[in-house]
Length: 446
Image (tube, rainbow, N blue to C red; front, top):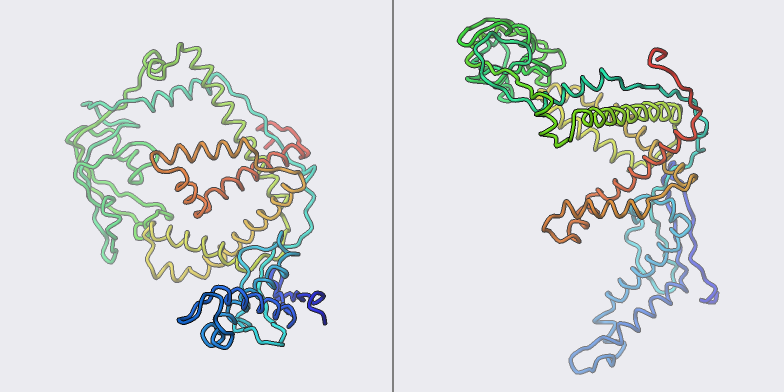
């Protein structure tokens, strides 16, 4: 066969869905041509004592550089085969292709074809579900004057001061108190729970969320200096497992009562730098409408995702699924550690955690691939305006650090890629809402 007509042969073999072995055969003629080029390049640069550069006799050249020439020719042949093999799959390959371990020892030999294989994972193949005219409901909303006044009262609360008072405790007060609990026999409390068991001059708010369960009720009506015994029961899902569901007898001594003092409207608008009360009400109404619209969109998006992805069950790239599952499992284990869950209990539930994590990872990945295909179909892309916003955000975060270093860090961590992906997918969801078959309903019809 003439070397000009010899071609690298690639045979794809499906190992499992989304997983291919690309068997590559570099003909002897092609391999010889590559070897000869490497030999010429090395000969032109080689230098040995007594010989000028490029003038080393071939016999001495082979004795001194033979293994290097073979190794370099082998690497170039593999790279040639690699490029030829992946070209038809470039748009579908996920991650980095790997040389098949079974053929990892392949080496150039004069007059022989080079045979090896690479392992690749590809994006899944699936039929895109019908994403237009998805039936959803849109719940109407009205921001009333009462809503505005309630929000302004909450805003006053955010600008409140707390002042010492001598009256009995009331709801929303903050107390400075000593407290201690009696631990039942056989119950061991971790160090992480110390502040739940005993504290001198601890701060306790008589409002949700309660630091100790039930104090908003049992500590009402007490005056500074008064003491009280009460039994408190921790919720069954309390974050510290040793206390979850436990009832503990407590002794409290009230030291100081601090009452919430809210600013009046004039003081509030002065602090907010708003020109009038009417302007404050106008801005508050806009904010509430914006929040309601956001909640409305989220509910519509949830409906679309539930219907769009119902029943999807296509195969996924094995390593991608495995990595996503591992990330979820690790996050769950860290959460259990933060909650103080005993190691034995975590170990006992590990299989359940792994099963749930695999299901969640599979759902997330299928959503990712479907949204990606819809983005292509609807030509939804990351825009120049998005790039400007991203760069501006990075500049703000960089501070005095070189911007190129921060960009490189965010690229390596995947933060930039996540920003791009999330921006595109947000637009996909908004497009699906625009394309949906929407029925308007009132809150009473929900």
